[in-house]
Length: 243
Ligand code: SF4
Image (cartoon, rainbow, N blue to C red; front, top):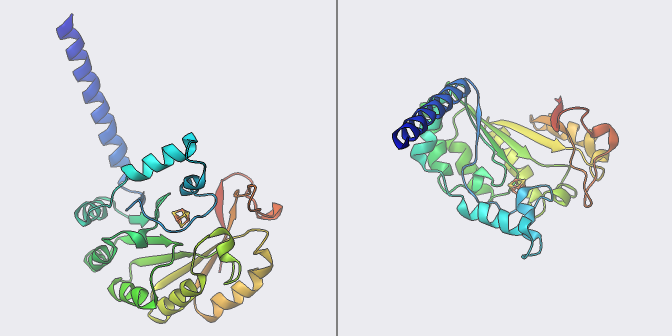
């Protein structure tokens, strides 16, 4: 009986491995989202990280703290393997970290020129040190890199949601990137506190040669609100308009 159970478990494990291999092979044609690190200095109220602001005895705090502590910085070698494996390329976005706080970020950007046929999307909302930091990053990035800056509104409103963001520096960085012929996208989640700035944003984006994407979202909570017409009907979050 014992041998039978062992055999069955072995078959089951093989089936699981085959299944896992199948799933991975199907994903190969897609662009995957990679969490590169567990670091981010911002406190966006709808981010998982925000639970770190909860009372320390609550399970939401403990679970989030543990999840972040279990996280680690992706090695350049592993990131390189992913870039080689996935046909379309990779998206550095994550759900509780910002890729610009990945310690291996510059080293990874150096690789971009070796894979000109792969797209590398970098989603970032957390401002880095200073404009020299961004200049260095743009110098390293090949033209297959797409920068997507999460700035929800203008200088006086974005940090209402992106708590802790140096929005002024983010605008400077977007402008510099555009001047340095980088692919710069501005992703703007519409909230009640920034909906009046849409037209100004459109004009600004046109003037500085930046692609602007307005996002409909379902991020209303007790701190912030999305106007009814800017909530998606089906999907949780969609890019509504690109100019
Ligand atoms: S920038 Fe991204 S990772 Fe950082 S707190 Fe905001 S949503 Fe979370």
